[in-house]
Length: 232
Image 1 (cartoon, rainbow, N blue to C red):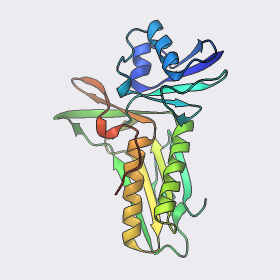
Image 2: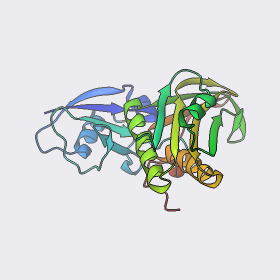
Image 3: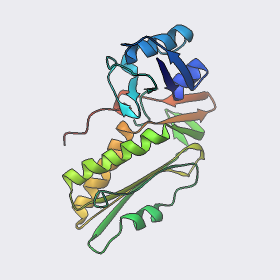
Image 4: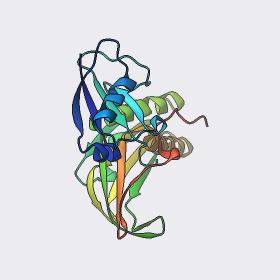
């Protein structure tokens, strides 16, 4: 059977490829797919705890079986690290306009709209940053954003949420991500917006590469890995 394997961010650079067909016998698992990729590309990350697999744009387990025609993606830690629930979701190369997302969640019953904008800063890890580059698994990112909107709807049934994230090169001062949430009251709007950005940073497959005088580095960390929803 033939599997389409996809690699992102640091893994893509380690293998020097982003998409590769893998032929395996029936009964193979996602772990087998990655093992074959590592056989071909020994520089690939060996620690599976630092990678989360996805099958057909949904997070999966290493032991899950694969079928002919599946698309299997290997996702390093991400950077961070119904009309009633979701109004607008976008992964784009174009500049972001927070007002556009606020308009998407506005309605007569919304007494409060809370908006978070993430902006590219000029320093990190004790050194000057010149610019950033963002990379996304766009189809899965859209699906994960909608899943977060569903989570918000369950906790705050009257909330509407919109999310957008830039990809490509971003200069200092540019907006990289926007989350807007509307609710009847301000406390709910603040909470829903914070939940939205925190979950986006945890579970949406988008990666950030920082460029500084000392070189470029993919930003990854335990607090940025995809994981279960917060409990608070």
